[in-house]
Each structure stands twice: as C-alpha cells, then as structure tokens.
Length: 479
Image (tube, rainbow, N blue to C red):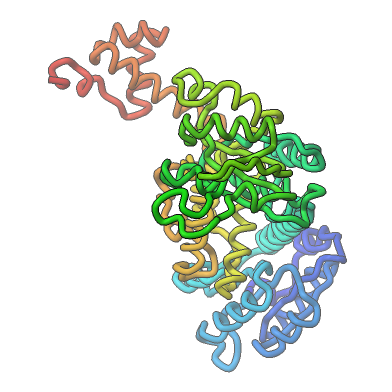
C-alpha cells in the first residue's frame, strides 16, 4: 500500500501514530502485503483495527464490524497490478454501507484511477509513497467527518421523529412555526398560514388537523385558485338537484364533507369577492345554504386558510374583505421560505435525498461538495417544492455515488456559497468598489479615486493588483 511504511518507522513517525487515542473508532485496513499490513496495524494500534487481504474478506469484515473508515489499496488480488478488483471492492463496500468513508490508495502518479474511485464514492485518496503524518491526517479527517455526519443523521431523525410528521424543522424559523402549530392545534381557532408557494402550507395544515381533537374526522382541502368562479360556490357549499343546468342530484359541498373535522381553504386570497361575503357569514354563524336550497344547515368544522399573497395589499386594492381577513386570521403563522432556512437547508435536502433514494431503490452516498455549495447559494424561488423536484430528478439521473450540482440542474460555478475567508471577502469587495467607481466616473481616475476616498497612486496600484483598467469605462468606450 505505502512503500515507505515497509521499512521500520522512525521515532517521530511512531509518536505520530500513537497520538491517535480513540479505541472506540473502527478502522478496516484492506491490504494484501503481509508486512505492510502488519506495519499499518501497528501504526493505528490506538484504533479498533480490523484487517482484510482481498475483496471477500474485506466485505466479511465490513458486515461483521461496520467500520466507519476503510483504508483500501486499489491493487488487490487476484490482479494486484490492476485496479479492477479494488474498484469492485469499493463499489460493494459503498453499496452495503453508503456512509462508510473509504480512503483508496493508488500508485505514484496514478491520478486517473484515484479520481475514478472518488467519482464512484470514495471519500479521499492518496498516492504512494506517503509519510505517516499525511496518513494520520487523512484517517483522522475521515473519522471526524463520519462522526459529524452520524450526529447530523441522529439530529435529523430526532427532528423527523415528532408529532409533526413529514416536517423537517432544523432551522430557527421552522422550529418556531412547529411550536406554534403544536400550541394552536388543540384549539378550534381559525388559522391563517402565510407563505410563498412551495413552502409546505398544506403539510402544516394537515399537521394542525393531525394534532387536534378532530384528527379522527375528515381533513378536506380545496384550492380556491384552481376552481372557476362559477363553480367555486357549489364546490364549497354544495347544491340541490335542479339548481342549475347539469345539477342532476343533490351534492354536498366541501364544508359539509368536513363536518366534525378540518376544512383547509388554500389560496384564499384568490377567492372572488362575491363569495367572500358568504364565507364570512358561514364563519360567523356556522351554518350554510346549498346552492338552490333554502334550508340552513349547521356545520361544525375547524377552518384553516392559506395564501401566498399579502392580505394587507389585497385589502388595500379592494380585492379582499377586511372583515373576512380578521375572521380567518385569529391566529396567523408565517412560514419562512426555503432560502431563509439556513441552518436546516442542507438537512432538508438530505432528508429528501434519502426519501427518494428509498423510493427509487438507489444507493447514493449524499451530495458532492459542488452540490452542497449550489444548494446553499441558489435562491430557490420555488421553495421546498422546487427542491423536491430537483432531488427527485437527480436521484434518477445521477451516474456516480454522489449527487452533483449538474445532477440537480444547478450550475456549480454560477452561484457558489459566500467565502468566509476575510482576505477573499476583502479582495472581492475592493475589486467591486473599484469597478463601480470607474463606472460612475466614466473611467476618470481622479474622480474614481475621490469616490473611493484614496489617492491616485493608490488607485493605480489597486488597478494593477486586480488586473483592471480604466480604459473600458470611458464615455467613448460606452458610446
């Protein structure tokens, strides 16, 4: 595996290996050279080390001990000079234990096979020869990453294992929403859910129903924007036989069908003004009249409404009744868009990835680094619904073991996550400020320097530093 390790280790190398001090961490070393295998086992003696010499024994040890990290040579018998058996072992390992961190070892200069292994799901690689410091860093980093991901999965399971089934609440905003849902659910107050399209309003409405005393009765939903105005009243309140052309029999409306349970009025901001008055009367009196009928019918129902619009704006434009708004908004819950759920954005993405991997029977190991950056940087105008659609497609289309930004349909280079490196942030800000100043001054160095609050020589130095020129900003160039 590592030619340098065949010789006796130097004193400082022995110290480096013995610094590893967590025997509870399991490491599987797959190496067919007996002498090297013995050296490596001794080097990692403070770990819980298991060894294997070929694919069959490696998979057997993997099944038996479930190590978090595997250190594996790509050259394994029966053809130790090739990489086919090593790659097959890698694929089988990740298929059985997708979260295992596999560090593959390649020959000196064999970057092509190393990159191929990483593309197939290996966590990292190193080339022969290496010293023990490098080996220690790679293995330590793999264990640290494995522990972080395991803790992440544990927290994710804890989040999902809640009465709010199907709702991932890992950000502060969504945790606050879930706390409100749990408080409001046992009551009968009319609740208004405000949030952009795709933020999960119906999911939260169902959670309100499921946590309420009405959970054994019906949950009935109607989208006020999806039904033509001339049919919406009949859909809501029902109609009597012969009340209009095509009314061949008495039909109960959604309100009556929800009797004893919960009625969810989605996109209520799109309800016609003519119907808003009848809905207001129902909310006040709790009785309805079917279209074409004269009988008042009492209905016991809990009402939950939702809209992706701003009610105050609709009221100002005379598109929504103010008295109805106050009636439906006894409690208002604001749902944050996906882009604002910074702490929980990646957790939700991983939850959906796991969901669709199970549905499609795919064994994917997670997201590549460029996919993580793209998820964090993208604005997600379609919110969780857009994320779900992209992940569903990516699970089907992904060729490797990791979902990439390209699989998600996101351009990794277009919108990368903001760097936290202060030098990079400062350089980016300075370069941008110079370009803006040159634009405003039409390339006039004196005016640009004045806008920036620096001297002309300093500006010239900064232009050279960032490879910029004032020539392209002149009025002549603009014309």
